[in-house]
Length: 301
Image (cartoon, rainbow, N blue to C red; front, side, top):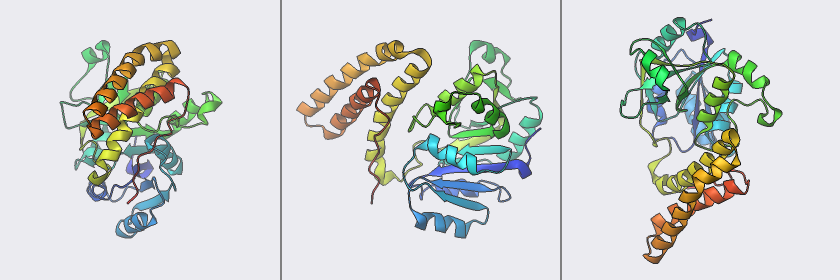
């Protein structure tokens, strides 16, 4: 079964995304239903969106759940067979949806289909040597991982996969232990291990502005959060898939380096750098002792 406009929904997770969300929404065909998951209790923002756009339905999560959990909520709300999740700092080209539909007609089976980033210096996918040899610039090609800012789900097919997984995932698409970073890698790895297929459609292009999803006035808080969660998520991902020892051996040298840099920037009174390296060390230590990804940026006005 291929994608059509009648069985496709869009899910966008937002938080403090007022500066980019309109450009994102206006790049999407108005005949497609859009579910906005606002990771806060900001009803003023969601009321604005629902009043301005007739094809939008908003869900308030009440708290900052993170990208994976927010997307899980949106995907479960969708009533269609296919769900296209995108970040609010993504803009579709005029023919992106059409090209995804055409690509799905040329693939016999897929669990995830992704458009391709227009920035060739930062590809939104990863493939092995065998896949590189088989890659075709004009036809959908098979990959191991796609970035989480644009992923089209074959919902029914992935539902069957996650039902077979261990109960600790609570039948979620993304592992909600990740607050941000690597939840897409984790899902892709789980799919590949179950024999599922992930494709990129090279004619379906998008612009991803990168790190613009949250208003720039919160840049410092977001930067601190990124550093904490990147380190935490790397340890958790490695431990989950390759064991505690590999996660420890790969992460420990950077943990020591972060402590040394924290001390250095403390001495020279560079508060920004000091806080960044403190968060890196803290992220590793919390993952090491098995604590959850509890850190949250302060996004209060």
